[in-house]
Image (cartoon, rainbow, N blue to C red; front, top):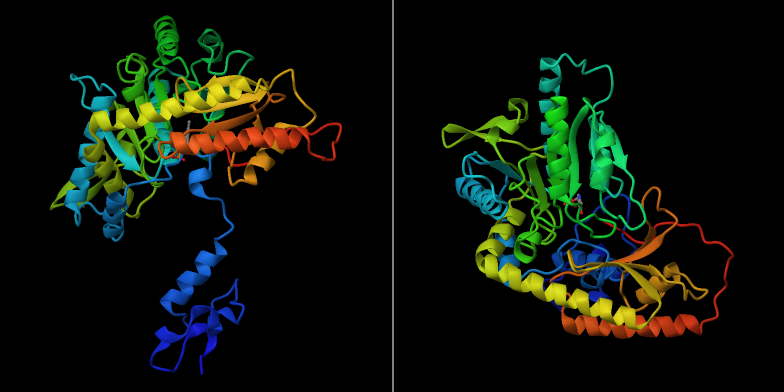
Length: 466
Ligand SMILES: *Cc1c(COP(=O)(O)O)cnc(C)c1O
């Protein structure tokens, strides 16, 4: 007699077909523990079935996060799931691998020879941004003390484009900072350097430049921001510095746009973060933050952990986590090398260009970001707009499994509704072709569809946009 959830008192439980077992005859409690254990196959089967109708990650064109890794990498990562990445004394080799990755990034980002860079892995860019932001805040506090600026008279502020990613809002909330937003303007979808001056004062802990604004994929002009900050510091005896949020661009631009100056080549850029799980091509769970010189990291941020009988400085908000994503990052670094990353990104870029060309042929959209920088395509309806909206188009694409988010731009441009596609390494030309076919069919279907129109559709976000 099979007991509950597929357990069986007979010896050969293997012979019971799963869909003939009790596990499929009983509704498992969802919000409290089931009393009896399930068989491993039964538990796995039930969960797989539960997840069946969830979006297919490879067709998710909303996310920057990596959705493919080579089987060798996956195996390696699975083999290392049991290692605690924070435990440097138990896993000194893993600590050395982290150290190598930091060095590789410092090299890619032109850390100056005369300075001693410092960096760490994190869970993602959000944790990295918290650390970088705190370093700015602590340094500003020291500066304020030396310059007789009362640190409590006003909230310290951080200046950033209104197209910031939500982690900066968290940073400001958690650490009592005024997030001073430079609004996006029509035709200016990155932080306008000529507007920057008016946002700076003696309570400014730093300026964040974004290499790949989440909303549109556009790059802030870091070289120009660096100039404005340099001049401001000179005239005002301040030490305002720049952090670059290169979550998506940090492992793209060095390969594809080596001529753009955005990194430690700029004297006022003190720290940079990136997400290994975006264009670093690793599954989610890995980010990086580097400072150009260790003296920019306040001692208060550094905690010493024991390491082979000695002590090793660490910076982290999270403590225990698996080392597997870190191992995955190192795998990609040595497996791909500089040329491998470049080839992959080059192909991704070509796919983005192809999609833009096909989209332009439809004569329905104004392209806002054409993927010539980061391979992110972003567009709005043009003047030939039919009665249906981009929200309807998102719906229609979803019928074929494609997730393409529609949302309004941030403050001051929030009447502009856009659709955005993030092109990633695993979205090859063949998949792109399929997508374009579905896309064109969706336009035809919508043109001849019978849908109920409402006079006004309030701008809202449809789909996950980060
Ligand atoms: C994705 C992103 C983040 C957050 O990164 P996570 O790695 O998801 O924590 C921060 N800033 C920008 C610009 C991003 O694109």
